[in-house]
Length: 286
Image (cartoon, rainbow, N blue to C red; front, side, top):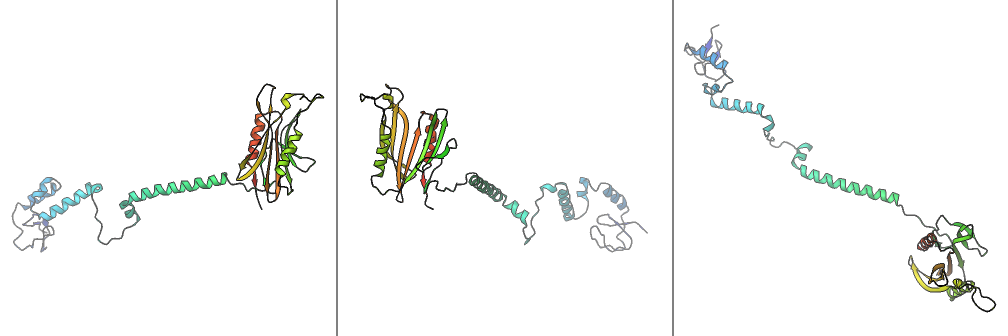
């Protein structure tokens, strides 16, 4: 077989071929001349990847495409790949195009989810207590430091005792009377029970036992309660500062509820207990 070269580009062509596979030149019988072609072809083969290849007698479009191809291989990260016309978008394409909306939506979702969890946990921790009446229709809550007993009149008594006797107590009774003067009569009875002791000359034995009565009304959980507070002096020369007794009464559904709160030892802890008891008073109709 005779070595032949294309007369246009100098590329090696096998004998019998009608066209050059490199440049497409049609070959004739007298086209394989020019004795220097083999040397030129060898030079091109040895230096094909260098910058001199641009001077080779190949078509300009061929070198341009080859250079674009090499640039893509070397800089594939910077190549912007254009979407094929009418190509459908997948989730990743949509996410890349609208990623700012996905991020904002994700943040809002986390905020809403966190708020929902917080509300549910708060409700489970602070679950509202179902209140039930303790004495007929009256609900109240007594501190656990007071022990429940009862008196001869059927009232409920809660008391704290020490070696001297009762120091703090709560008493709850009900009265089914229909008298319109029930509250006035109730307070009058309590006053008579707290009168000081007199000697044979009509003088008070101990001036510190003389009570000071104060009457009024107070609204507790939307119910008006009438009260009578009883103050004492700790010493004969002191002002009335010791709140020893609190009597309260209120009517509900034709029944009067009477309360008697006592702090015999003038204890601050007892006053806090009695205040807490009053705040818990509610009428519940089942």
